[in-house]
Length: 472
Picture 1 (cartoon, helix red, strand yellow):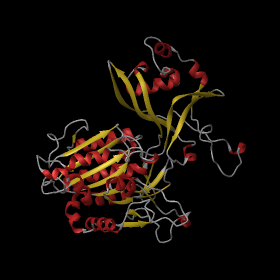
Picture 2: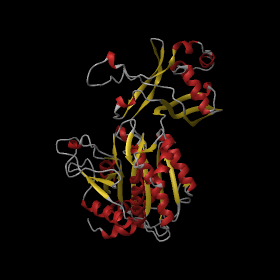
Picture 3: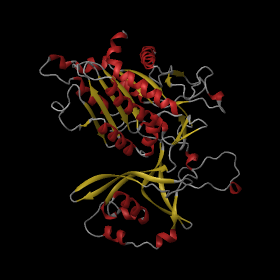
Picture 4: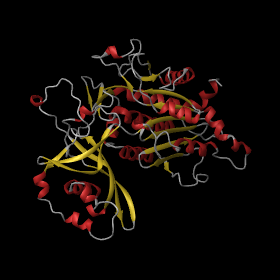
């Protein structure tokens, strides 16, 4: 029997086909838990107080939430968990209108390092955000088309007998959306309407995308096609995430990397406030879920931006009123804080066990995996292991260890990046999974509960544990 948290994760990931939807889902959870939404553009001195719970978003695709201890003082430590909201995917191109041999095609761009052949022969649809004009303003609307409208078909084996299938990502991964004959029967009123009126510096959106496609998007957004100014749409698999295996021990899902860790972080922060009141806590409990990790994090809302440093600086002086300690509060907070970089890990594959280091072969449903790399592809070190191990001991959850083989490349995370940027002690970990970066991945249903309990223990207990690990 899978734990309740695994069922809740299925609801979360099914509602979150894009980073924008993931952040919206997170916001709903925070609102339901009594968190207050704040904005970066506002002054926090009057709104953010010890004992309060808050969240904010940037670009609608990254979210930061925190709970301030009732005994917080400037310069005190912050216990942090960092995750990411994005996954490898296909994105609609700015000019997507294509056709060939009687088929309507949609131009797409690869995002991240996906296992692209897994996208063939799937029932695909689109979701994302649409910028629409309402009066004199431009507003964002989230859309999610629930029915399959796109497909990237395989070539029949009779016509392609090569043993290795390596599709050309530009020419052989174009989804088909319908038949051109049906499109020809559509009226061109919308195209004509957008071609009239004020000067437009770009070609009208109805000329850049198939009218039938735009009509479907407009219907989902609840607007007219003529109101659509631009959009960022992502292809996703309409097959729902489900439990699998004889005993429901597996989660079969898209986007486990990294919505699994995003969900566990969110739930842990919410549960930590319920189980351990903030009244006597001297620290701040914080989670940050960033966009753009899969492409290097170098963006205005990625982990390599000023998002987290700017928030930490503002929080470090929270409560200061003419106190000279404000001059060094930020540096003091960084020196005593800790970041858990939470990104999914590799479970041992039974058919390819030789690809894994023989003494470090993580198993699903055996606990969260601490990731270690001597070349600092992961930021873990011994003091961090001691801290997380103590949190796991108190929570009663198992942990595992992972290193790559010396003759194998090693991925990386936001951990080394943020630890270098901030000078904050950091540890990399994640729940184990198979088929990472496939359109359909496999994880352990019990590992969701393990991670939530581990993160909850870390967030609620870090203020007390920090003083016991004496490493300078």
